[in-house]
Length: 411
Image (cartoon, rainbow, N blue to C red; front, top):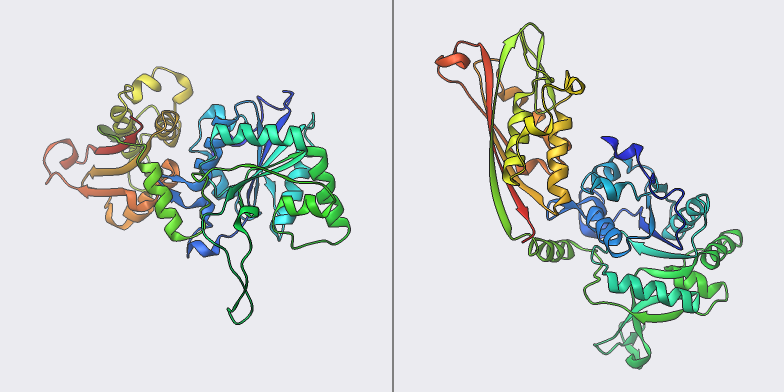
């Protein structure tokens, strides 16, 4: 992953902050259906976790943030945070690895926070699958923790609740006025909740379903503050569709950009196309690695957001780009789009050459581009054509590529 992995926490490691946010994203999310864990599913062009992290960083600009992930999900996490701005990535601590149960994961995340000095005064513990925390909700959580030491957001029940036995026979009707559904972020004094989790682990107390229950078990009073209906948790496939509709409704400025690039053949034994290496009896000449397809797509993205072209951002006169991987240029164009709150809806590209034959490599090229850009393969089309032996491509003097990028931006 480009630079992001090397800049975790540079701007916060020595910054005194009374507020930390712990994002719990180590679960498997099986109720969301087959596929990647739900926190890494693409929603409105970005992984769900990227939406959650961005919302939290925006809502609490002074907070430091750490995410707890499954030990097997390092690559998923790296891809997710590529959708954040460089400034946002710099506010993240390196992720902590979770445990078998949610309770274990939160404790391990708190222990990771405890290793970063100074210790926070307040910690908010938030589910990675809740992508809509507002600044007002975060402010209420922080204030409640400072006042009470332990507090959670809750919503009054609208429907009547029935208690049933094993045979689904109603045995009680609790008074709903005294009941609340509970959300995250749950808010605590850091020393209080860390001590409660340590005590639970030492005494073998497991199976507590949220951090409020752990604080209660440890003998602390937990208060309720006002939650928000918009602060939904993504659990099922239906929830994913609902969240996508909400997020896409904010991206109503639809634009298209086009890109075109040409490179001549020269000595060599391979060409790069979309970040994929293909053996050939010639190479392509150019200042960078001469990936004609990546260059065309990069220009298409810059064109869609009206921010110049590849040469204005990466001048060939600068020695640092000599022989550089063109994935750097493509990632930079995507990053500029993300910093403006946008997403790539679709890439349509055509390679023009007589040889090498593109068909056998088409899927590998699409997969490579999907990894670089951070979108699903079904949003990338790669086609190939010859020029019927006409012109410089027909004479096998070089290759050309054309691309169209469709992007969505906030109005």
